[in-house]
Length: 155
Image (cartoon, rainbow, N blue to C red; front, side, top):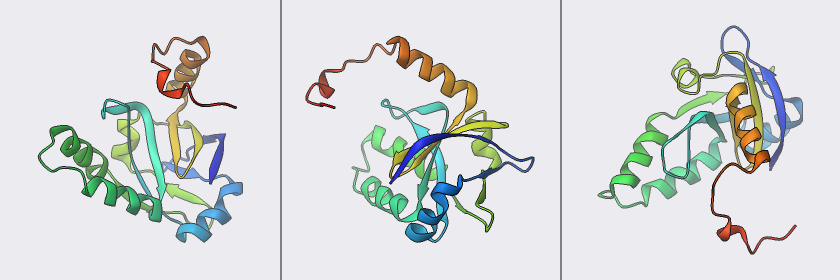
């Protein structure tokens, strides 16, 4: 289970150094085999400034779920094309680094500074500016989203 936030600088080759606290778990759960793809929002559109990073077994479960969606449903087909079509396998090297493909870095406008957010079964990789703007929106309560679905939660 991945949780927490880390501020990370990509190196000149576009590699992200995975924080030390996650490396042994990634070695154990997926032998350092990961999949990175574009992030999608609730409308199944690209989430600006964000990528998703999955351990390979978690990604394979997602692929199975996507494969069960109806093939003639336009939104399901687009979601499959978007997530799977942009997916790229990557391996964490011995120093805990992984190369983010250039196409995905361009998509998410990721240049140097990123935030890595643990999201239990995956990570989100956010462009620094996009994350700070999103965080500000959430803190100010300007999301405009209906919270009715969350009304049964308690903390």
